[in-house]
Length: 401
Ligand SMILES: *[C@@H]1O[C@H](CO)[C@@H](O)[C@H](O)[C@H]1NC(C)=O
Ligand SMILES: *[C@@H]1O[C@H](CO)[C@@H](O)[C@H](O)[C@H]1NC(C)=O
Ligand SMILES: *[C@@H]1O[C@H](CO)[C@@H](O)[C@H](O)[C@H]1NC(C)=O
Image (cartoon, rainbow, N blue to C red; front, top):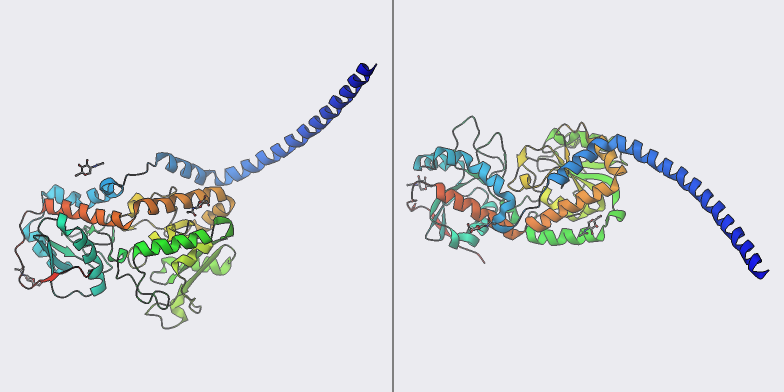
């Protein structure tokens, strides 16, 4: 009897569980269908970008810091024309002479022509030359410290070193910009003496990134900068129309005269690079040439939106679109679509932000910058066909440390 009643209870219990489970199953199935549907519509809308990202990530292989191999392809491209010509002659150097500041390395000492139009830029370059000089053979060098590259493809190539160029347009050999050490652009009032040393900036911005984890960041695109090129206008205009999507505004530059120079609105105040970390999507545009800010933006652990792909610094080709940043067309035609994609695909954005930051942290340390200087100068010296003869008017440059 007792046995039977236990049995009945058991049956009742199982029946209830069965009903509950069935109901639960129906409920679950409904939720799943809805979820699938949502995933499908969302997936269809953004399928194109997701595919591009998946493919790019699949094709990407991280590089090794040994011999700064991350940047080897740039070195090969920049020297290809000289390898093809069989080397750099005395005449080539003579013809290059007026396109930059002339240096000589003789018995591991550095000499320079007296005048340098931008003393802090020269000093930023010299820091790296002096650091590696014990490893360098004798050579003549022409280093352009202006913003613009100097040698165009419609001319004969000349052996001139420049920090930035357009690959299909200029012959210049790219070197790591002075601004990694000093001589970066002064931005009043936030950077009165220039952006400051790269290793220090890395620490400052990394701390800001830690204070602004993804969930605390505003779900918005951000840009502050002066109107060095009208390429930036469409983003400023989009910001005025859709301030919830983009916060972009022009700041004054030295040439500012009236609101006309900030696209008919009063200039916005400058914002420090570490304060960019408050926003999830950070825009980089070319300036006069490549913009120095790109490397800093990655440190925020926000997603970098990089506009255009013409202007380069030596490390740009190692950064891959969709892997490390979101590529945006120069005319900004697709920018609104990309921002909506970003807002609706947060996990994707977080992983791009994280990969971009990790690349810069791992592969663009000051020692990688020195390593690349060494690689390009050793390759260059190998191609020189004439031994340098000491120019008596040059002065010796010594380390100030
Ligand atoms: C790096 O360069 C050194 C000297 O040129 C060479 O012996 C070494 O094999 C290189 N390492 C790699 C990984 O290419
Ligand atoms: C960067 O962001 C990702 C995802 O938002 C997070 O997992 C990671 O810890 C962050 N890294 C740093 C150094 O803050
Ligand atoms: C030495 O340098 C000066 C200044 O750059 C230059 O005008 C002159 O031609 C150079 N002399 C030789 C022999 O190269």
